[in-house]
Length: 493
Length: 139
Image 1 (tube, rainbow over the protein chains, first blue to last red):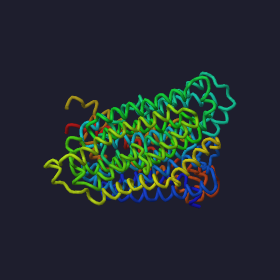
Image 2: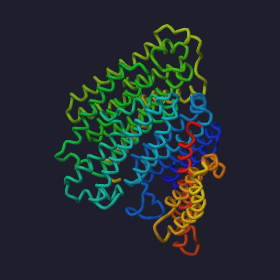
Image 3: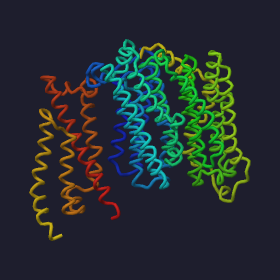
Image 4: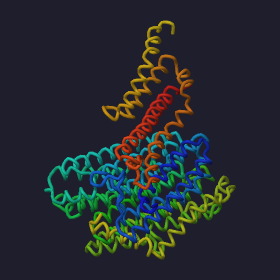
């Protein structure tokens, strides 16, 4: 009986976790609730993935109303993969959260933080699981509102400003998305993704449709921080509580990328988009710009959290690059990079959060020699950094391998060159942190520090180990991504 | 403060009618315009009017802040909980037809009624919480 309801359970469990956390006043109790909820969500997600692998596409009618009238939750390989990423990262971060949140947040705010954390997870999973365009908007707002609050809970007063900045940009993004969906509703009279796809296929591709596509692209583009719509991201990531940053950086943009892929491949149909307006070419240019520009800015960044945030903008560039090439191999690259980037950015931000926990700062200036006093933490950072560069033996290499192969398949050798060239810039920004952390003499302040507590280390090491494990044996991640890409290309949502 | 006797008296006269109107909008929402959201806003407006006339602390004696903070998640829980009840009755999430043995339409009516109660609780308490947050600044 439970198996049948899994698509809705994976949203309900984090939702109830959030509500119960909100009812408690004590941070520790809320943490316990959130831990149980995330573990249960992960278990349910794995169960769901098993079902999808076994039975193919799963459809669930909310309220017993049949689609396309009712809201449908529809799970195929593509969103099963995305949900797995979100649930796994949310669970892995939990042991880290207790100590980190207890230190960074005031006692009366901790329970609220876990509420927002779980609401964000519920929203992100909801976006991924739903097969209804408007329902996706609702979940987009649920996750975004929770995210704004989570960022505002950061330590510095400027967290409020960053949250407000993101609130404005995020709201514009969500509004654009809903305008696009509204246009599609007027053209086709439906909101269900499958039904939309079927009706768009037989509707002449006119200006209204193009406008809808433009609004949706820009709207989701804002959410996933596509260059040049990324300006909210560095401040938001830099000033959120460490735990929040790790969750957001590894999951939030991924889910937005997924939504864009879903809309492009399964709603409009990729052959429709390759029409007379060069949408994909535009995305290609923007993603290459992101890869170079954001990496370049990261090289000169002094705050390591902001440096990693800019790196995230660059990495989103790689994901959109795969989407814009619109081949099966490239899409596999994008999807596998969703998982891989979640691991490496998760590990990197957790490591930096641990430094912030011990040192109270994440500026390069004060991190001198920190690697000598916190070798495990910074070791994990180095692994994550190597992944960001794309060194063979790490997950970053797997993603870039797929992208480069896809570029060669298209005969775009220049693109393959650019992927490698942009990776070289990553060598510089990762190298700067590594140099300061390991080769500089520790300051008096740093020399007094010890290694971070075990609860901070374990999740960090786990994600860093995953970076290497799935970099050596990518059969699981790449296999899932390939199945997901095939599902998307099959058009059988 | 002595000069606003008329306002105070009129407010006191209006409050019961506002609350009755709120419950009318709430319970008549099935048949006419209205529902939990509108009713919640009206009920919260009654308390906010009381706070404007008699001061924030007087209002917080009636509805304390801690209660408001508990009610916000509680309303959502009533809503989502109604859906979960149908899960346990072997139907899909939010399928209210399962709530009645006799007739699915009754089940739908009860389901929507319960859900609207949840909406009322969350909306009214959220409105009050926002008012308390702004009203309580600088105290």
